[in-house]
Image (tube, rainbow, N blue to C red; front, side):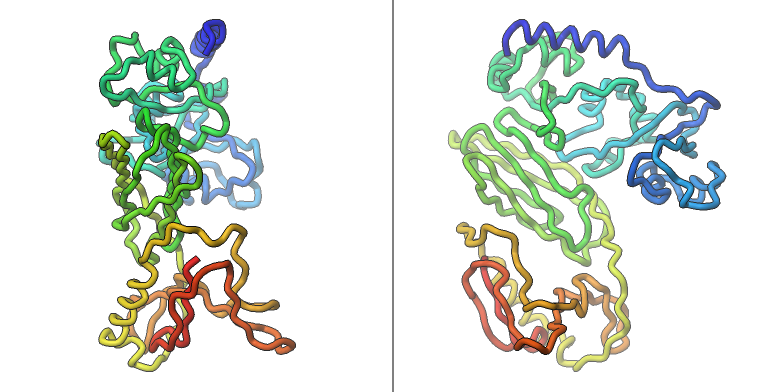
Length: 402
């Protein structure tokens, strides 16, 4: 970054810090929220961790359809907090301290309005309540200082300057920086959903946040030099594939019956020189809200563990193999001819032969809804057939490795 650009940035920051104040409501001392497009009363209640009843009662709302963008709502349960509020999802790699630095909101303020009593309550995917600022914050991206690395070296690698890093990171000076500290540089819109957690790691993004039962988590990570990546997510090993040079992605399904709650996500990065870096953060897995199918009566052999366990082990031995070559490029197509209909959705909770709802549907059942063309099963994308055969539980099966 050229010196005059750094000076311009510093002047903008000084103006921003001087003029930015918490927006206050023009009335009583309640905390308030401005309704945005797409908001519902339920989504607002979830964002602020309050009950729907408490939200509607304090705002005297009898008809949910009365909600409109720009409407100002009182947020109950935040005693001692006033002014306009908003929320932001805590990203993977972020912390409450780094969010305080990035948003220019005092750490103690964030702790107080979010009613946080222990560091163990912080996890990726949680909604953090923020005072709404009069000015938009400057876009930033998070980095960290490597051991035996100077701030100047880190700034040059990031095409930035030491002075702008000190200002954006709200530091007293360069001497207060230690290896591993979370620092900030000026970013852009493409960095908005990414967090850098070490100097040789560019961006990291976990999507969606929070995670949900039965959905696929996507972990994208870029590095500034060649590296070997590994990790675990919700008790499952992550396998990373290289999209392009130094850009990696891992896709991992979250089990449909995994108990909602907090689970560790661990990432390990090994560089060519042998140095190893690991990072772990808690992440929340939310309920998939799967419905219950009507009770079903089936052949007892299809739910007998003596039959189902060996079949599950066979399937797992086939699908757990890692194939590095991607054979598909376009979107997957439907596995049946058109027109089609879906007989049963993945994840639906099931009761078999009078059992409790301890089972779930492990696939999507597509039906052919027209008799005008013969029944056909289609490969949804290019791949290699790795299994064909008759299975007791799943019936005639074809498994394709894409």
